[in-house]
Image 1 (tube, rainbow, N blue to C red):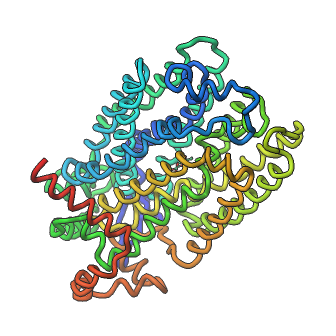
Image 2 (cartoon, rainbow, N blue to C red; image 1 turned 120 degrees about the vertical axis):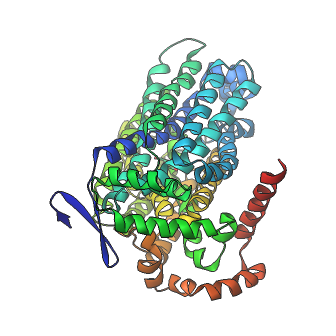
Image 3 (cartoon, rainbow, N blue to C red; image 1 turned 180 degrees about the horizontal axis):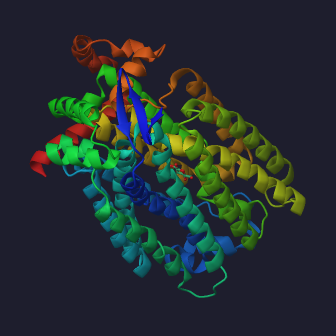
Length: 537
Ligand code: BGC
């Protein structure tokens, strides 16, 4: 509803007034640059790890193998665990860093956590670019991983908290938009650098990551912290002043009172990770974990991570492979705008369901074409078929880009209440990195063994996630974060059974000893390490 230039968000019985103010838009654009670095890394490593000079210097075995024509196979050229581990090590580092980042987002705020991420990025880029041996390269990569862990923890939270409810989805997706821009930028860099015949060219590719790294660092200096975070950390008056500025109105009392109440409840929670396991938080936890697992099992990174290698392996020349990867990258960026535009109008569920159908169909078609045309040691892909494969891959990427890509980050960041907001986000980021790591680690071997069947494997997963969406993912469009429990979870046909009173929670906490799933026990274990570490380490 709009009134006198004000966007008025409905909040249960009351109304919150909120203008779309320049400070909100600018802060969101700046913070979202945290996604650029994540994207650049995803896009650049596939190419760097197939550059002859890079391989010769750091992975001579792979370099030798890729030159031995007689044992080359279309599906198996780059299947090397050491190389895959190197690529994936960033995600392992990020996975651990996100738990520390959960602590800093709560105690130091979203803004400072983004600044820390920027510093990690800069240090990682410097080491990678100057790397003289494998140790330097890996330490640099670990630092980048820490940066990604901190940024992916803080940025989606920041965006969800600062945005007015009715455009929260669109603003949150700015993060994913930056991820896709980062990937495209990397694809363009790959396309240009491959033409430079010099031994240092991989340094250029890695060094250009300094641009997104600096953008986030600068952005983090200029943004204001979210009112939620300021209030949660006891800066009540500052939080109120910021709320007034970002909403562009003096009429903020109702929203302020809700934030105060949310923060009071948050303060009572001494162990956010343990609290996450309470029965009433089960729906958010299950959905956050499932969204991340499913996002990765769409198979998107099989395409994006290794696009040049994939296209090259199925018979495109090296130039054509990089060119096709640029096209895929551009489609990824453009399709993300579809999501920004529609997510708060059509809602989250419709995007996920439509994309499920599209991804399933096109993955099956890709599998059939590759199965018929690409054999182990020979390729029968005519130019016409090659273009057809690229179009199919683009159609698959576009549907991911308006669904599981952005919504994998958006939905977990908007469903947890303030008291478990940062712990919940940590679990989401950690799960995402773990499964990105699994795909990164396994994809080239899977391609080598499953061959074209890899796309059938992923299409099976797409079917499962679409059924999950149909029955278990509720619509969260236009619902203020503070009101999710009442308006979403308590109304859902299945999840409402988890929403009974606190008394039930006490009982459930006891019965959790026997009933919590293995994954949840893992979080308890990690949170215990964290708690004891804050005393002893
Ligand atoms: C995913 C990445 C993926 C990217 C592609 C992100 O949301 O987390 O793993 O590479 O989207 O655009």
